[in-house]
Amino acid sequence: MIYVVIPIFNEEENIPNLKNELSNYSFDDSFLIVFSDDGSTDGTKDAIEENFDSGSFVIIGDGINRGPGAAFNNGFYWVLDHSTSDSDIVVTIESDCTSDLSILPEMIFLNKIKYDLVLASVYAQGGGFDSTGFFRKLISSVANLMYRFAFNIKVQTISSFYRVYKISLLRNIDSKFGTIINENGFICMLEILSKSIHCEAKIIEVPMVLKSTKRLGKSKMKIVKTTIDYLKFLFKLKFKKFSK
Image (cartoon, helix red, strand yellow):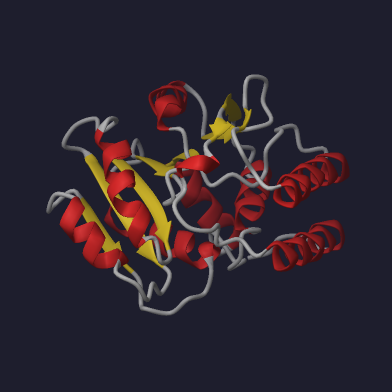
């Protein structure tokens, strides 16, 4: 079973394009999209129900806006509760169509044959940005370099939403740390990557070009808050250990 976990927050205008993108890469009947709604106040839910076929998706969430980390965590636990096989996999992508789904078959193949976690990487050779704001690109680049240097992290990208996980890895993280994700903000991607490394997961990167020009509307990332979150998390990793 392939579960596609997508955090959503006020993405009404992006939903039709997301449906078109995903339609090109549906695999078989064992393909379920889990929309984890982070308290959308626009017509996102209606847009999903209008565009996606009944039975191909579920929408979860309690109507409260907490951040992408909480949305991912809810989505992961929904999958863990409903999965019946350790061979199931979990794909995570952005809801704003910036993920390049043309590399998804390769990512899933690598996950199935060997790797616990496959990362779509703008920093791997062949990856990049088609059009991204200077400050956001700067923060991403500095954060990647800082964490890789401080903690000897071998992968080149630490913050991308676009990943493929073995469900057994998510169960292992939950068992070892008591929860999959604690952080509610965008720093959640670094948190789960760090936990995956602690679990000795086999990780590989696939180059991707981030397609910012496909996004309708503005990014939900708050640059100043995210920068502060990175610094706080750096301190936490440096002086504390993850604990259950």
